[in-house]
Amino acid sequence: MGTKRAGLFLLVFIFSAKLALALPAGWSVESGDVNVDQSQENTLTITASDHAIISFDSFSIGQNETVQFIQPGSASSVLSRVTGQEATDIYGSLIANGQLIFVNPNGITFHDTANIQVQSLIASTLQIQNAMYLENRLTFEKGLGSNPGQILNEAAIAVPDHGHIALLSEKVKNTGTLTAKLGSVVLASGEKSTISFDNQGLINLVIDKGVAESIPNAVHNQGALKADGGKVILDAKTLNQTLDTLVNNEGIVEANNVVEKNGQILMLSSGGMKIMGQLSAVHGEIVLHAAGDIEIVGPTATKGSTTFKAANDIKVNADVTTDSGDLVFQADSDKDGKGAFLQKEGTTAKTTTFGDIADRVFRRKYSCHDCIRRESDLKRGGGAGYLYSSTQFFHYHPRVFGH
Figure 1 (cartoon, rainbow, N blue to C red):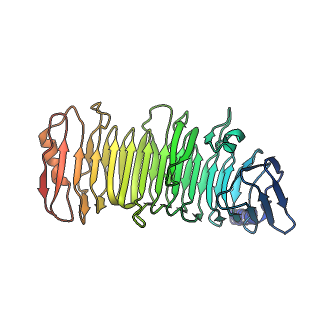
Figure 2: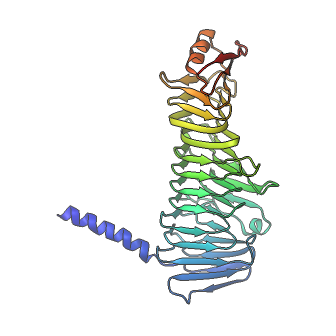
Figure 3: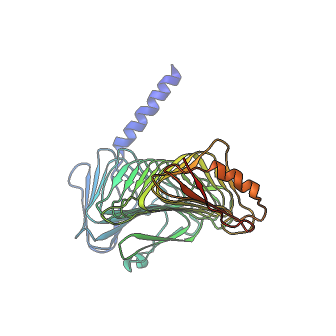
């Protein structure tokens, strides 16, 4: 009975916490014209000029609470940062008619009840200097001696067309849905990252400095990331070489074409990578590049030309199917002789509708017998296609396969 009561008390406490969180408190204006209005119960309304900078002692939103930023226009930006010691928990509504850049080194969680309505969102546990922000230089860096928390998204967050969502931290996890049609969705792990924009308004990400110590599953997607006609980036970098899995995708990633705008999916890891789930960039490009191993741990379905590129091994431990595009496996991409293509018995790699399969493995020890064995395990599903296998000793030999 005591255990049941304790469990019930815990559930009531958690539920109450969602409702009882105080609105952001202890604000101060560091730049720009800002007016804060809390005359309406459970609502904080912040009217801010373009490129205003506001600091808060704490910033959380309860399930029945709303924080609204009113900005001059959709292209306007506001930087809000937490200078206190508390992490941010968003259970309620966060609304902005412009771009919101939100920084809290203690950690940020968008819970599944969160209602996020913004033109664009950059959330970071890494700091940005005021002067750099005011000059439109979006470089985020770990503070000296700080120990940043993580970013967790459980919510369904969608921005208007051409908007962007970027989550920057040492550890980022998504179990919700992030959508930016014709825009960018970015999950990135590092100690210093810079965001810029190309001539189409899509994000270019550079991780200037990796994390000092390897963090397993530093970028972890178990939900859905969608940027049709745009770009999805998952990127994790460490200072030292590691065999740890830094990027782990178990969910859905989509960047399909929209009105002749092709999408792109980029997954980059300075360590290992684990992949399963669905990756879709119809008429676009999917690139997965790891400085360690790439391991396909569960059924993986891709749409559009797909390249798996690993400096070490590519381990196909589950079926891989690519629809309407080529499927390329390139192990030992640094050509040091320490990588191989390893396919578990009973698994199938194939293309459907159309597309060829290329097994480009650079190995110092490789025999034609190995090559033939692996070729027999690779299948093309949509009709006759070509398989290319090559090593330092074995030149390309295209062969035609049926179903």
